[in-house]
Length: 117
Length: 111
Image 1 (cartoon, rainbow over the protein chains, first blue to last red):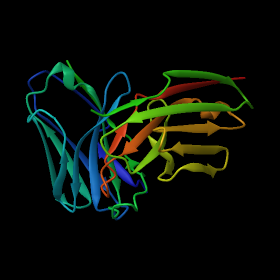
Image 2: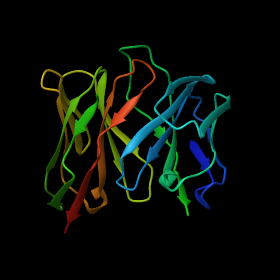
Image 3: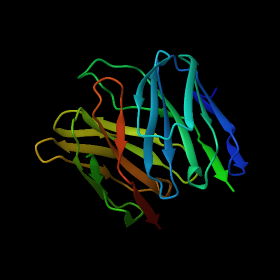
Image 4: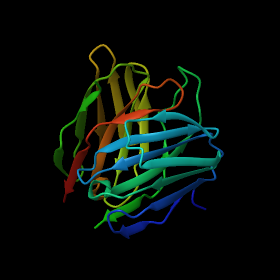
């Protein structure tokens, strides 16, 4: 029973297209994230939601739009895809902790590899 | 700005001990995490240090010195399956586990 699951696992598409990636977690966590890992394996946070509310929105082009219908789901829609969007996108989840009680533990999905041609 | 520095590659032999260092400069700090990622896989959590000192979990240990903005991951009794990338990550969010990751250290374990 997968804890954090993402679909699709692979996406190959043309420049200019729009695509979505879905993520679901069954861990009962209240915080979910999207991370982007580029070809040099650098992991960069994009967004985070806590109980459906956007709490972290890094400097990401507004072509990227996250949506959280409920606290177990966080989807990512990308408009007008560009070559530079090619990467592996990881969804992750964690419990919200009060300050000073952090665990530093994120549970990652298996990733969605996006290739833009 | 935020920056984390770790070596890009480390090579070791089976049964050896290896230490992966991480230095950081961030605007806030709640703790230092370590993650392992095998090629094609997801990052998986190894350890978290919020306070100075050494945390041991089986063959892996992690150390933090907040005054030196420095930490390390120590892997003992290396096995072939430990060949992977290892990332340090600073949590500077206060509750939301907003992690900033280093660029990763690729560990190659040879027979």
